[in-house]
Length: 81
Image (cartoon, rainbow, N blue to C red; front, side, top):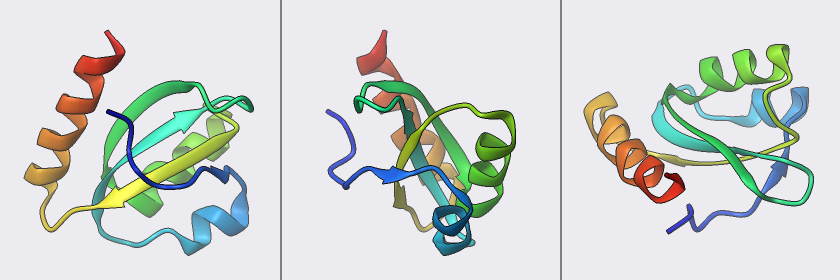
């Protein structure tokens, strides 16, 4: 099941609005197809994704801990396989 959050364009304003907290994120293409699922400190992860051009869109969900983020990301990666 994809994250139940709206897609946002992956651009500087979006990255700067991302929380500086752990979470899971999905990177997508312009059509909304999920390209990758990642986890970590959201703002840091999205800065890297933007710098490397890893997607056109992003959506994320905050978690309380990095461990929760890793577990949630693993669940979402399984669905992509």
